[in-house]
Image 1: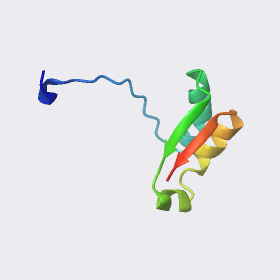
Image 2: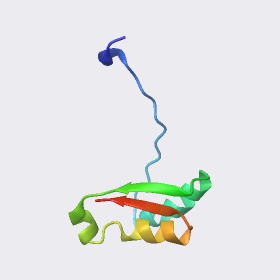
Image 3: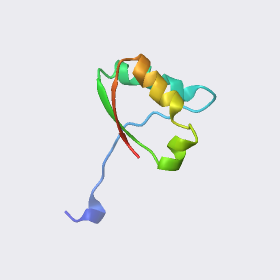
Length: 68
């Protein structure tokens, strides 16, 4: 099998709209996860665009490893 013929199926849920980033903690907890890797650009973090996600995860007592 060549790389061209490979296929991967990954279930993806996309949430859009005001406040949707604050659902992260509830969604992660619902998957019985206790630790996440949060990947973002340094500038995105500096502008505060991940603050809602971070707060939601912290409120849900989810351990966060940040890669920026």
